[in-house]
Length: 364
Image (cartoon, rainbow, N blue to C red):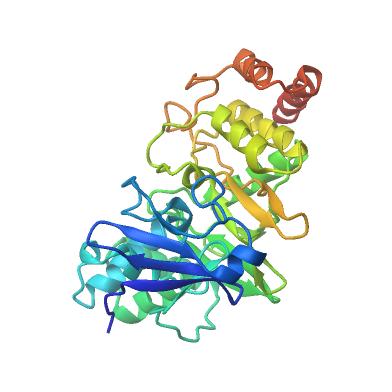
């Protein structure tokens, strides 16, 4: 039985960060725990500075939540699974409050934050035969599934983000996210993403650890090791769009915004050039799915500050007409636009020219 939740405790690796609570039917307040203010960090540097008081988001982008909490909610594939899981119980997902939705996020949820009470239905599942999971996903996509199949796939992927079906699987005590084909994907979609990541790595970019898992029914399943987990601990993560309190579904960001955020919250100046390299790769390779949720920042407790996360969701998107994020205001940028934005944000022109040329040579 899923109950309506009006107050949540926000946790980070068993430490209490603060509290979320309904103020009225339209507003949700957040307040840091006193101890967290003394020894913690801002979980959203622009919107939630580390100080006492109740914060209320006046924007309605996230149903009254701040972006950092919205990042915890499933998106795309995960949202579809949640909706189907609730619908089979006779619950209208659209009538659930944002806090109730957060209470359904499992321990697999993205990022470092967790929420109590948690109403996620746990259960053991040792069925990690990837071709079997792929077949079960196909049944769900084609509305041919039974409740047992839905429950199993929900446990594996109900906290996922992004459009492609995913499963969260632990392999040798390490957590991986493995992607599966959509209904209309080719049988080489996983291999293609694997090759894209190889190219990005060859360009010298900080690509998350990845692998192509074997299959008997397609060319393989692309998998990425989770960078928001390390040695059994959760790592706090916030997306670019959520930092700026805007939805990634609205293409209103420019790469300038990414560089400005890095200049504001990151301690390592090299993150600027890493981001510049990713922008060059996306433009020259044709990855136009470069929206604000495909760039993220991790809080590094060793340096007591934020750093750019590893590069992820690297694909070629020939079906998109323009980039989700413009380059200096241009939706279909050319090499001159890449150099123009480097000049606009006062990066080393020599270093940026080398990055452009290296990317071109690798992709050639």
